Length: 180
Length: 189
Image 1: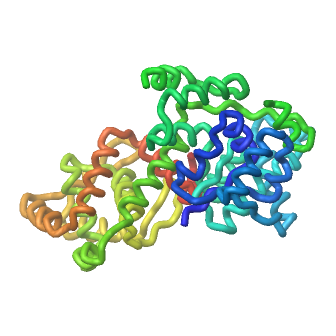
Image 2: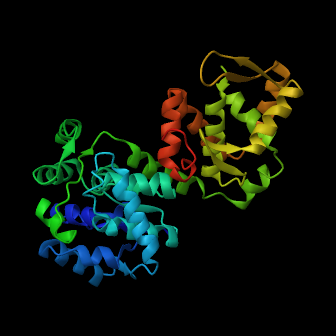
Image 3: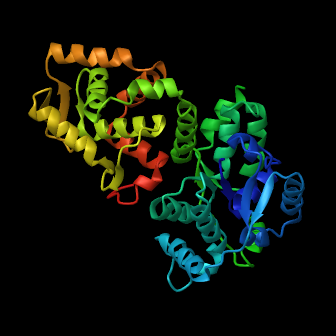
């Protein structure tokens, strides 16, 4: 059974593009997971209502809160410190509790993939804990590759997301998907 | 959207770094996972055919399909991917240049000492190029190839083809992206 655990920002961005439903389809699983800490971070009404719908449909399950708070905080510190631009005087490990909870749950459950956008979080998950990570946009790219959505729909997602999120090298996909 | 992230992290404004859409790390991880899922579906009949083959036989098969010779890093990575995609259980561990297997190293040493393979030293970071030595040895390797189940032939052919145009750095990037658990002892990632 494939296990996919998502952090907060992939939920927010995929919900903004009305693409949250793609997650179970891309991974070919009946459901995916978030942690209790991630659930607590979702305060935006639109994301929250889409998340609740997935839970009600049995496509999303919430994992219990991390028991080992020391380990959780230690992973959050690792993430905060992994960013070379981070000023040690201002870093706030608490900002990374969501990512840390996902990494911890990923290790405990032997997750196949973590959905995570934060570069520091992905770096720590990969090189420190040997976990595979995908960012939210890879879900859309792979949905096209697997013919779950067509290129025109993917381009709509990119157009919506581009106004709200920073991407580099969008030209390639704008060109590639406008021919679909 | 930035405000939503700020709300999500307890009111502290957090700036996520941009995602580079041409960064293929996530795509490699996903696509290799799919390949692995596909190739894992082997029949017992297939397994029975290959159970007797030793590590040295698999090395010969990989060398047969890399006719022009293959550098150390690429050879180890091709054998590693082969094990991952077919479920062959050799002992691989994370090392400073990716997955390493003592069994493969010993197999290579054995084949070198009994003159089955030849090695040439290059002035590059990869240092050695391995090749099957003589026509008779190539014929023996061809015989091994013939008994392989088609699903295994497909795995070998695909891996050799996928890696044929990849540079040393690209090979390492591929393996580290697809199997980050083997990158934890890496000097570079």
